[in-house]
Length: 316
Ligand SMILES: Nc1nc2c(ncn2[C@@H]2O[C@H](COP(=O)(O)OP(=O)(O)O)[C@@H](O)[C@H]2O)c(=O)[nH]1
Ligand SMILES: [Mg+2]
Ligand SMILES: [Zn+2]
Image (tube, rainbow, N blue to C red):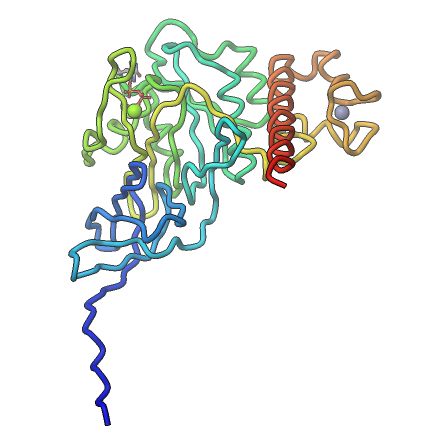
């Protein structure tokens, strides 16, 4: 009678960790004891982003750490790629700090789209106006008033001089926040000022087209036991994924407040008669630029929907 082979001793240790850096398909995880390890995902299917909590296995045979599973996420910030397909950006955020500055000139439409993405993901959106030491105001009073009326708080600060950094610090307490925005607005400078004990420079640095240094990866920094700050690479443009967004208001809080007074429940607030949103724009009660931003996002949404249905027809 053949004797059963003894099970081969596979020394695999399991542990939980947080993803603190993501470079494409390479990751860095931080375990409960605070140690950082390089890790690779098991298989191609796992979608992993900065901020994720993951189960890891230490494979002693190959002396490597493998991410075997992603634990359930409380929130997921996503963006739409050029085809309108959703791509995850960061997980488990409670707050999105969209940074603008005098330099580079703010694109308020990009700011709006970030704020919509935050709303769609159930994350608090907050505007940070950095480089407030410079003479030009990055956010004119009328625009600032429109954001405040919509319900987005604004904090003006300077990473360079330290002006009002204590306000930003208070904002970050007991939150998992991400800094997003155009390249060069000062996101990495803010992280360096707010998390001085951490080596912010450890992020991979490359030069962009204009020869400036930019971080190529998203990195999470632990501020204290329950406060995390994620620095993300600069972007030229950002489109929110529109799959989870509220269809009649696209994540604009001030439009959501007006929409119940529209004649049609599914009013798109474009040409429809008896539309409370169009009436508010005409009456000066809704900021015209924010409304234009809504119309542009609506157009993008429709373009994505058309492209999606064309693709599904072709694949049939
Ligand atoms: N005047 C001024 N310059 C700043 C401030 N914060 C950052 N900068 C500069 O803006 C440039 C871009 O900063 P960086 O942190 O790399 O921006 P990021 O691309 O958003 O991460 C650097 O030259 C910084 O020194 C600020 O508060 N005031
Ligand atoms: Mg940076
Ligand atoms: Zn309407």
